[in-house]
Image (cartoon, rainbow over all chains, first blue to last red):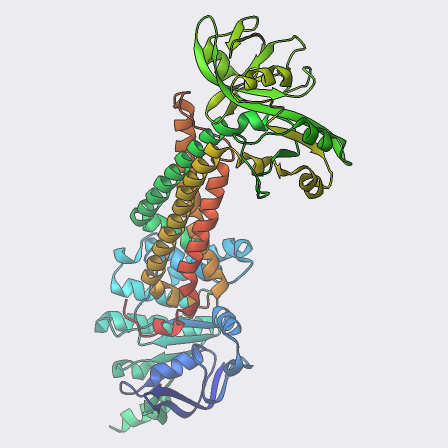
Length: 239
Length: 361
């Protein structure tokens, strides 16, 4: 579970500071997708970066499975990301020299020790999850040999490779057409359920909202609206 | 090394290019080292064949060391060293270059008069025999004079019997022949005015070196330091050494520049790996490991080429293939290259993983 409590983040802007995230409190629970939406510059990606421990908040608290992520050293934050947080980037961000399978097994090699002993298990896990996203037959292809949708699937599979409890997904459909985008959202929803992750999904695409457990909207760094699926369903029934 | 090895395979063209540069630098360093070694051997091997802890030479008027060509030691000075407390042996050594003639040839050779006793051992292969007017030729001198054991060689009008042919000894680019100090004194007397006892004293033991040197108006230098008293050695090795040092510097700079550019090019990948949780230490090890593989491969191929060329180079060319001229420069190239690479890849630590979020690649 990931829990934001009254979190504020500001950026320097010349002699002033811009508030990117303003006193946000939000909790994502295991096995569910919390969709974060809002216009550009509303603070969605900053909230994701805070959850990924890539930046530290000015104030407030971020708890990741009970660990206060706000006060971690760079080294400890890296270890936390490696072990408990999966990140799906907006672009696939695959490494050009690695095959599809290696994009996943590289996750086993990021720590400082024990990689060699874990390699057989990592290989099995990578093969299994690659099959889950429908790319078992593409395991030995490099990024330039894959389509955009296939690269994005590997992006998702890589994020889940180390069995994280938190999955942070940053606009995964922004460079895909409607059909492929919908397939990617399906994969995120299915894997969230099967892997039991607490998923935060940032997207502009309103067409996917109906399938989300929960949708929250951000505006100027604040959470301005939170909809539960039941409430939205009721609303659509009325209309 | 997971990503590093795959990058090497993937970007093989770029790495082949930098490896080729390393191979060429290694070959250049190897050739210069071999040449420096060969020239050094042709300068000093005749001195290094003598057993001594320190070589005593005459001091100049201002107390500075003289070189082998100008040093002159008196018997009194040699005796004082021999009698000094802590001295195990003090053997007078005479060195002079002269023309030698045999029945079949003539050549310039360096005559080294060694020791009061004609039985003094020079090496396991050769001794100055206790036959009056005898000489031990180096292989180079024997070849140049076309002389064998039992032949007679004439030097400065003195006929000397070849009692042995020893090793490949040289002094200042002339082949060496050893004779007794008494015979050397006779030869030297034809070349210089006045009585001459010896050029230096080969001393073993552990006396108060500075004190005895001061008392006798001499200088005492260890094996390597004494070689700088051979003028040709000091100038040749100095200039070649400077070239080799420059090549080491160039090598480190080239490697450093390559890995600086390479690291900048892959800073996007590094940001992704950091965002995914890669430890900075792991990324540094990966990057340096990659540099190590490139360096080791390039240097190994370069050294193999140098050894190959060394095996077929004509014997007349002063080219020495030994660990000192191959393994040592190779190790230095790898160490300096890694130092250059370390400077190049240090920017790994400053790559911000945040740039991987929302970044288009």
